[in-house]
Length: 412
Image (cartoon, rainbow, N blue to C red; front, side):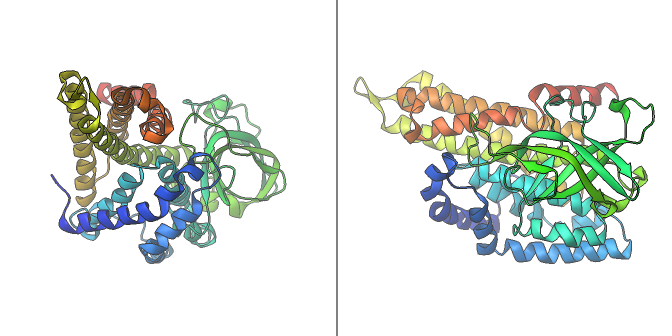
């Protein structure tokens, strides 16, 4: 794949019209935390029939799970996706939204991609019906709770949240931080270490995955954090103090790791999250480049437009190189999906590492190109630069991506 198809361009243009009508007028309210992004997400789902498509896809997945057919094979996935249309249609809204408001994508991606995705992969048919569908359609908001104050990049090993058996129930304790949608989530996918009373070191204990619901006794959700950027994506902390849940809240309703362990679930979601971040980076890079080219054409100094000066041209040229490289990574991901193949963790990490660094560098160079104006909020590159920085931090820091890539190379 080397360019968007005609159909894909039509979808892109429709998404752009929606953004101009619904997102752009609300940028200030989103940026200052006065407007959570969820109603805009729901309106987008309704406008483009994404909610109905989610219902249809859910029905197919539920029937498959109920029949015991297991996961979709690579050949079946390739036949269903055809020329990569399914992956492309998922990524186009991400790219376009990130031109203006990356936080909306983060909020949406965590709710639908991570929270709902985990439930649909690991849950029983009853759990899929109870929690999955409402998340997939946007009717409810989900969060994916793995990071803790003392674990950070060592998310699984350093996890201290615990699940202790008590008869047919579990008692959950612990707290999570930096949780996207945490303050407003209706449904929370929560990871905890099994405390079975054995001498197994906490670091090595089995990881279980639970689903929590807003308002459970002993469960608290903090107010949104104040952050450097991504203000349109509410982030918060979760506190659990003796939260009692039945086995029906344990995903898969079994501790048997052969049915899908919490560790494997988390690692699988890392691949999804990191690949999606390349599409987010592409949208942000494209917008910074567009704004920079327009400014270079119109900004006059010493009787000459700044775009005629070689140092400015160098900045623009490097931005275009970054755009092409990240776009090629996104296109490769679409082609792999069309072939029914998935990225390895190392490939997703490499994709995320390069894209995040490129987006941050382009955004900061855009601020520099704009000079004093670039530091002012009204010129938008200021917001995009603040938003871009988190790309190098969440979904695994740059340093973590490097270790995953290197370990894969060394273990081949």
